[in-house]
Length: 490
Ligand code: ADP
Picture 1 (spheres, helix red, strand yellow):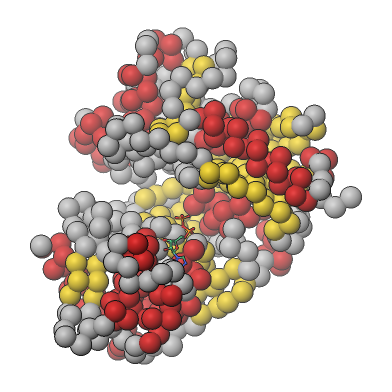
Picture 2 (picture 1 turned 180 degrees about the vertical axis):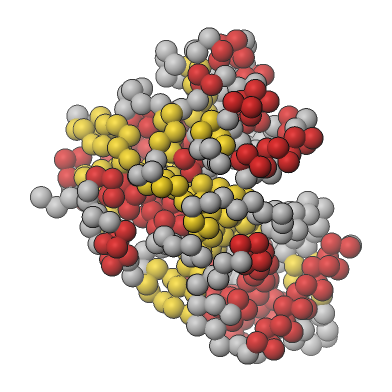
């Protein structure tokens, strides 16, 4: 019988299930939107039970589409929006508060109190004090539900990121676990010792008994009882780390960049965590057998979103895809730079106050120049992250593997390759997040023999090679740096 790996990809706005065959081809795919709730300005929550129901729905649908049952599934991989925090009642299995989504700012005041501990926290977790991470969200929930702290201390409440919640529900409450990559985003996990950190737990006053067991990313977590069949959950990883794995960035110096609404770049730094002084996050990429692999992570807040802005606010385009043709109508931006700092600047500037700005326009500037400057800005921002990674690791970055919606833009990909002076590789399967946990699951179940076998089936639809001469790159990038400086001074 043909066997598949089932990946569940639980994202911020939707849940997807994909059936992959042995070659990593997508055989069927199902998706459900998940509603985000905005109870107050800056707060983002979701109904945790609705998340679980969406998982059941997509799993059901993906099997029906392929006309198979769970008996055809070799194993399950789970990947998820990271940091999002759920606390539930151990006896009823019901959430005691909505899931607090990673983007939510509702625990910002709590984070302010820990500003003085930022060095201590950074050394242990590789993270910067920010409401994104789970610790302050757990604190928020325990402080906002009746007798929260007391119930947690009595062992009545359980905490999990979305992976743990799905595992718990799939195994009928038998398994309360998470993987290292998700644990490393909670701000309670020590990435040096690879265990929950007692000092951090004390600092945030989080009882250890509510935390999930931390397991490797490729490992048999337990049996999911689904539609009267039993299938093992064998791969678990946070979305960005799963994408790094799905891009087969198995070696030190291999990196991936996702061009979605924002951009997320991760670099495999090998078996030791590298702490950054310039705002990159240090994170666990995955653990396979006893071997932990680490990554550095940088983010750009506005990536593909600048193209949405050109379409929806500026009405310069009807479709995002038109931007490619318009950019190619002109030979350059005619000296124009655009800095899309709509919500501040991410790595390496971490400037919340910066706002979008345009420079160097003349009477000769056209819509095409403007659109091109916006696309180039995506590439320049990613170069800023890439340069910091090179600088801090002294690792030779071999190439950049890419995914996400904006990789459809061939102009952007070629310009990115030129400006980084690095080869850009676009994989055949763009669902790299789901593919990553399919690979992790298949490795643990024996569906795949080893990493070599995975590399041998992984293929690319396009490879972009740098064409621009280095002098031109330097001149253009120097202009970008000037534009950034001016933006920050405004
Ligand atoms: P997310 O997962 O963050 O929602 P996606 O990976 O689905 O993002 O990518 C969507 C983003 O990609 C949007 O911001 C959109 O503007 C951008 N995008 C899609 N197609 C193109 C294109 N051809 N050129 C440039 N940007 C594009």
